[in-house]
Length: 400
Image 1 (tube, rainbow, N blue to C red):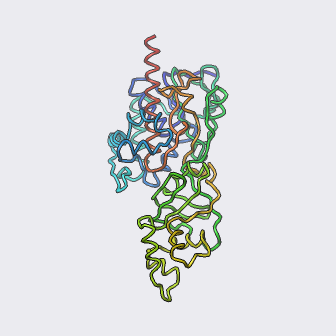
Image 2 (cartoon, rainbow, N blue to C red; image 1 turned 90 degrees about the vertical axis):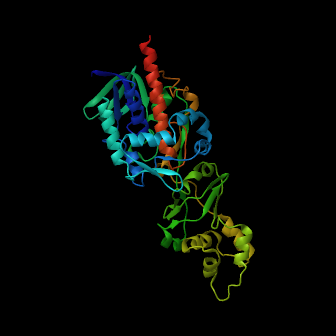
Image 3 (tube, one colour; image 1 turned 90 degrees about the horizontal axis):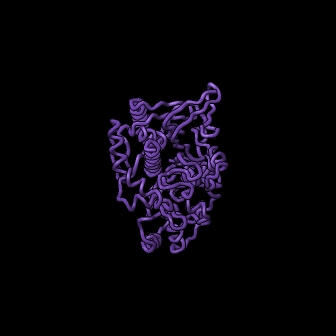
């Protein structure tokens, strides 16, 4: 079996890997991208089905806060390739973008495929070689070993960027199988855990009619985290952008609480519910006085049955409804994962301390961020940082 040689090898054809390849290609290096799946960017394309939220247009402090505990060590990468840079990059690929009312930035096409095609064309123009159905299985000495349609192959590269994804959505290529390989090399890893995940709820039969219904105009809290986004009820539980940001607190065991009237003070809710209701049912009273929709009233009844008749007690439930749940949904249903390669395993160039010349990027790193543009920007930014680190490593080697 022969060994291919190249200056730079990128393993993983998602946003982080492709950005690392672009950065290395711009630096003038020969690059091979090895992707285990038949095509590039499968998870990226899946994100495009909901419009491809590329980034979030907001000030630096608020944007970095989206990365929670990892904000400090990711800040240099995000400062170098943050929201404005992401937008300029997309425009450079011929994809105009727009900013929604909440600051979320999308391509005008509202899908990922045109951008991915343009990106692949740019890489091809740089001479970047793409090899699909190449699954990395580990090291053979200094060479990287792969299973391919043609049988086992090896590649010897002077610099390697690993962008292998997290451990969710196995059908799209992110299975976390690389963790055992890196652990055997002495790389410090944090355990995988679901992030941006739905919450399991054992609904009563009466709630089946509400499945698929979006719930708007509410706030949801867990521990110190609060979200105002939309949620959706399903047979499995509660899903959607409104619940996903609470994943860190819910993993830690925090209670889940809903505010069904977040724009009204408790005193106002109490006063409205204290109005005479005459012969109106309690459901109609809630609708008339507070504007609660059917799905919101159903949630109130589901988690606080039987509802109190006292306006003060009822108002307290409207403003702080305890939600009984069974924790986060399984990791393979999660949009992303926490855990992976720990910060302590990397230097400030995203290079593995245990494997000099090998860099890591994207969701395989131990960070998490909510949907809403943070995830994709984090992958692009760390991909660029790892690619720049690898290019610097190659330049150092050329200087002797």
